[in-house]
Structure formats: C-alpha cells, structure tokens
Length: 253
Image (cartoon, rainbow, N blue to C red; front, side, top):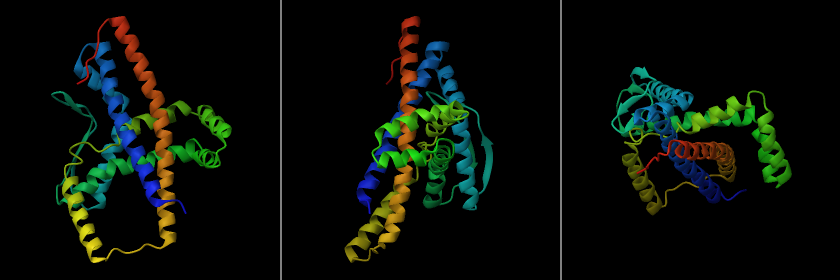
C-alpha cells in the first residue's frame, strides 16, 4: 500500500501548481490582448473567449450542485462582465442558505472540471497506458505515448479543451467566501475528536481505495500541468514577440 500522506501531499502540490499556473496564464493572455488591441477590456475579452468552454463547465457545475442540494437557481449568464480591473467570465444566480451548502456550490467547478479532465485523459489520450509506463519507469515508452497524444484524432481540440477547462475550474474568490467558516468548524471538530480519542480507524482496504483514487487524480493533474506548461510557453513567446514588434511593455502588478 502506498503511503497515504505522501500521496495526499503530491496531490495537493499538483493542485497548488495548477492554480499558480492558471493565474499566470490568465494574466499573460490578458497582456497579449492589451498588446494587440491596446485596451485592458480587450485583454479581458480575449481571456473570456479563450476560456469559454471552461467557463461553461464552471457555471454548469455550480448549477448542477445547486440542483442536487435543492437550492433555487436564477439567471444563467455566459458573457463577460467587466468590474473595474476584474472580469467576471460567467455567473449563475443561486440561493444562499448555509456555509456548508454554499461551500459545496463553490467547490463544484473544481469537481466538474476534474471529471472533464479525467474523461479527456482516459478516453481521448489513453492515460491508463501512460500511467502504467510511468509507474514501471519505462521512460522511453512514456515519451512515446506522450508524443502519440498528438496523433489522436482531433488531438488539438482535446488539448484546447484541457487548457480551457483547467484554467477556468478553480473556484473564484466569491466561490471561496464561505470556506473559511467551514474549515474552522471542521478543524475544531477534528481537534475535539482527536483529544477524546474518538477518531475512527479506517480499514486498509478503504485506505487503498482512497489512495488509488487520489493517485488517479494526481496523474490527471500532472498531464494537465504538462499541457498547460506547453501552452504557457506559447503565451510567453507570443508576448515577447508582440512587445518587440509594438515596442510596448505590459506591467504586471
């Protein structure tokens, strides 16, 4: 059995790296829009256009979770809304109830986006074979399978969807608004159970199932990181060329 804590740590690290890369890509795609069109709003519009499929998954995930929780929903909007220096890529009106329900609704885009990435990885790119080669340390086979991804029918469409979904799946600040209270409550409850010695011990078979699931998610995020890094390189080179041609610079604060 793999070390559960090591597996969770690697998974958490992949999520953090994906979040940081998503922020970098978002800022620099907006920078390219500013260089091409000379307007901050145009840069935000370019970001919205690029991430449109991911935004649809993001908002639809909110809607589905709200329906599962029995919450009322209102207007569903997939259009950019400019708020000063920020842009809202999409929105859906959802009834506010309690912190736990609101937290689940806020977490829904991450869950929905993860499911889409898993589906693309395992159904379009045969990630199962890639994972098997990686775990067997067959590095030549890993490189060969990675190169074969470009030979998959409609590979560029699948790669684009990975970029769009992964860069729109992270919960926004408004999605995370209720998380602090829930985390504090759960942390307090776990602390009390730990002090009283009431924490249950899970059977090894259950732990194995959880570890296997988390490892699958980690591999999916690793594949996503690799694809996003390739896209980030294209963005960086495009931005450098545009700055050289236009003789303008984009200052990021």
